[in-house]
Picture (cartoon, rainbow, N blue to C red):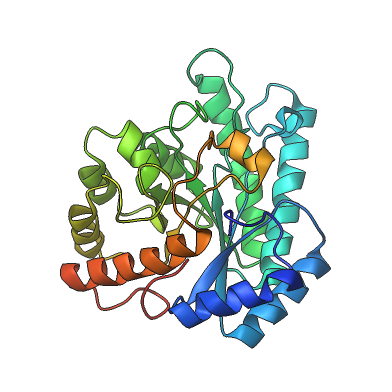
Length: 288
């Protein structure tokens, strides 16, 4: 949905209906603004359309940094996450994903310190408790080094997940970021399969899955090998939302139309699943 908006509403009903008609089982709903009641209304609309849903968010405000040395900033970050979790629950999503460990695009000029990692563990345990109360799992994402510095690889993310040691704090594997940071993206997924609770299918240029250089046959074979049976979510970006385009460094169009991303992307996922011998993920086949 990042191709169109960061706030899904009734004005997107026809688009969502076409996504369902294409064959998707669900959509990933951005949570960046609005109220709990807004997301409850969106959830009812998705129910009417026969679409399941997950949630995604990020926080670019350094005043809400979960690894800050300022307790007030960490508390504000926890408050933001608690709001996002309550919105997710109202939406009817059982998971929310993203770089929910630190401020997106904020850098210290050095790598993560042991103190920052310890602060992250403490905050994530608080967030995990609220997530459990709302029936939601948080899927932390390792981002490439140009977008964050706390967690860049699946090994680092998995080690951190184990240190947090909370059942409602898990990991997400994103093919775009893995393609940048992992020496071997395939074995990184297989090696850390025990923590992976969500997967983003994202091409190396953020465009249409299947048109770039991500090793898709090997990726889907690895998904089968790990026994993963959850969402496969297309994440793509365009220039339609200037603030988001700036945050994700998207300066050009990666597809002829946004519709090509989900229509051709769906065909690519279905074909890749069939080739790998995957009979279906959590919701029938693949999900946006």
